[in-house]
Every structure is written in C-alpha cells, then in structure tokens.
Image (cartoon, rainbow over all chains, first blue to last red; front, side):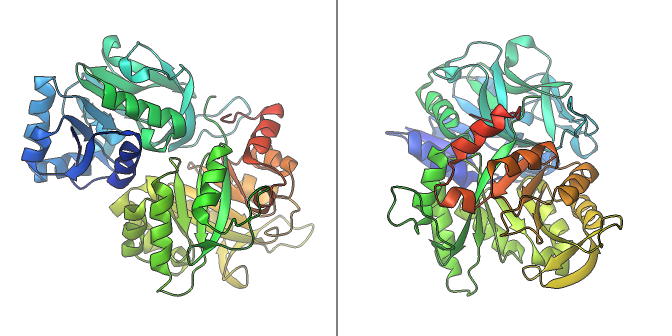
Amino acid sequence: MTIAIIDYGMGNLHSVAKALEHVSENERVTITRDPRAIKGATRLILPGQGAIRDCMSELEHTELTGLVKEMLADGNKPLLGICVGQQMLMDKSDENGGVWCLGYMPGRVRHFDDTMRDADGNRLKVPHMGWNRVHQHHMHPLWEGIPTGERFYFVHSYHVQAEEDAHVMGYIDYGTVRAHVATGRDATFAVQFHPEKSAGAGLRLLSNFIQWSP
Amino acid sequence: MTLAKRIIPCLDVDGGRVVKGVNFVGIRDAGDPVEVARRYNEQNADEITFLDITASHEKRGTTLEMVSRIAGEVFIPLTVGGGVRTCDDIRALLNAGADKVSINTAAVTHPEFVREAAERFGSQCIVVAIDAKRVSDEGESPRWEIFTHGGRTPTGLDAIEWAQKMVDYGAGELLLTSMDRDGTREGFDIGVTRAISDAVSVPLIASGGVGSLDHLVAGVKEGGADAVLAASIFHFGEYSVEDAKRYMAEHGIEVRL
C-alpha cells in the first residue's frame, strides 16, 4: 500500500507527506516523480502551488502530463488533487493570461474580484486566506464524519467554477462568489483548501481518502 | 461573509527554545516549542508564528529541526520569521515544514528579494513584516515610517506607500507591527492598521501592543485587520486562544470555534 505524492517540482510536499503519515496505518508515503513508482502506487496525490502556468509546464517538463492524464482516464486509482492540483484538473485557467489545463472536468479557473466589500464596508482581501466554511453539495465518502459547514484552511487567489453540478462536491461563499472548492469524478477528488493544514477536519479528510475504495 | 478572522499566537524562539517566557498553567517547562505549539493547537489557534531570534548561524540548524518536529504533529499553518535573507533560507524553512516565511529587514535593504521570492515560491508563502512608527506630531495629519533594528533605525520610508510597494512586489500577506505599541499592552495602533488595511488588497495581520481581549476586537473592528497576532496575553495563561475567540464571537466577529 503506497501513497505517491507526485513531485513535479511545485509545492510544499513535505506538509502533505507529514499529514498523510500521521493518519496512515499501513501505507507508505512517498514523494516521487518516477513514472514506475507512480504507476505502482495504490493512491496518488496531485499537489500544486504557485502560478498555474509554472505548474502545468513543470508537469510537462517532468514528462508526467501524459501519465497523469492516463491515470485520470482509467478512473480506477484514487487521486486527491490539492490547491492548484484541483485547478489543474479543469479545462482552463484565467491565470497568466490563460492557461490550458488537464481538462479532466469541464470548468474554468477564475480570479477573485478584489474590489468586493463586506457588509461593514471592509475590503474582502485577495488572496482568500484563512478558514472558511465548506458546504457539502453532494454526499461523498471523503466527507464521512465531517459536518457540512466545517471550516478548512485556504490560501488562493483563483477559484474553480465547474460546469457540471455532478462534479461539485463542496463550495464556499466569499463576497458575491460561490467557489467550487471540492470537485470529484470517478476515483478523483480534488480540493482547493489545504487538508494538511486544516487541523482535525483536514486530517479526517485525508484519512477518508486513505480508506476510500471507489 | 464566512471567512473567519484569524488569531495567531506568536513565539520568540532562540536556538530551538522558546524565550521571553511562556508559562502555561499546568506546564512546568514551556521552553520546548513543540510543546507550546501543541498547546496552542489544542486551544484552536488558527495559525502559529515563530520569530526566530537566533543570531548565530550554527543555531539555525536547531531552528530548522524544531520547525520540522512541529510540522510533524501540528497540522495548522506555520509562519517562520527572523533572519530570512536569501532564497536558500526560504527553501530550507519550507522544506522543514514552514508554510509561510516572513521577511523583514531584507525587504528594506533589498526590495527585489521580495519579488524574487514571490516569483520563485509563490506569493501565498511570502509574508512581509512591516515595523512602523508614528513620526507626525499631535495635531498633524498622521504619518508613519518604516523602522528597522527593533524600532531604532529610521528608513525614511512612508509606511503606507511601503506596504503598497511590497504588495506590488508579490507579498501575499502583511504583518504590521506598531513599534510605538510593541510590548506596551496598550493595544494596537488602530490608525496605521486601518490606513494600511484599506490601502492594500492582501490580508493584514495586526501586531504589537495587545494587553486585553478588547484590543483584539478593536484590531479587527476598528483597524480592519484580517488576523490578530499576540504573544504575552496567551503565554502566561492569562487567556487561552479559545477565550479570545469566544470573546470576539460575542462581539460579532466571525471566528473559527
């Protein structure tokens, strides 16, 4: 039983690895870019941090784009996308002047409007940073034991707008924006928030991922 | 509005030990940062900030080891500041398990470093710390300047313009400390907090001067801060982070309980 965190050079992978190690019992957690190790793993984590153009191009440079697409198309190995890893699964992002992504779920990645204000007239800051309530839109094994409206930790300026309701697993409201912060299809689940930094709720989600047999 | 205002306890760490005294009720030796971080995590802290005041290079390794130990068992965001001067410093801290790094003096002496760091690691992990001091006299329209070396060295930089510049350069968050209030327990400097919070699009952490729970409320309500940072009111068990959150919630502030 191996969980492979796909290391294409972007993101702070150590935090994810440490949180997974904390909740796993028999699983080995490995950070790797070796295609054989990725193919051989029981579960995959697709992380991502920073600009999406860099994430997509680094995935290409490490020659992992094809492999990741292949795994997604097979649809039988559990994969968890985190942060930009969620955004990469969409068709296209508006960041960096427009970047084509993996196209696994129809949808778009958009920037938060940084002129929004709250009821008291205070600016709503971008990046959207901190703990927000995640409302569960569809039931999913990864939500097991986590109440709807639970808070998770976020830090991002772009957010997912999925086209198909069936793919939206959870959302947040920020100002006038409803962002699809959890999306899923077949054996893939992806979140905008950082489960590895979301205290008990986040660890529960990671533990649910380890238990999940789609 | 559903994003919670954050409460961030701050620890001063030297050579891997918490200094400036932390004394939770019921804990004999609170000098171990891991133990302190664990305690704050149990109290539902939203993040933890470490200020590494280690002067010598040799002791720096101890700090990295400490960050790594904390990151292995406390699963909330960790920010580490103090002596961050190069991209290698940042890389080492992130690899050890820090989620954000806070850049202070190096931003003043070499602003391009902030741009370089944000490009390399992403704005989400680059916090710029701003130490501001009021330089206008009573009756004049208020003006604050950036100071370095613990508030001793003026730089001539206007605090609001500087904050905007740092955001343009890629800072994802600002940590504002009022050097007039730091250590006084008289409350945040609301004027500079409000002025900078209104002037920038990124989140602002208010720091310096917290002596009561009302100060935390004022920082958010009057100052417009997105997060409040405090040290001594939490260290001595006077209030727990949980007490602070409940008090803020009673005053109509959205917090994570």
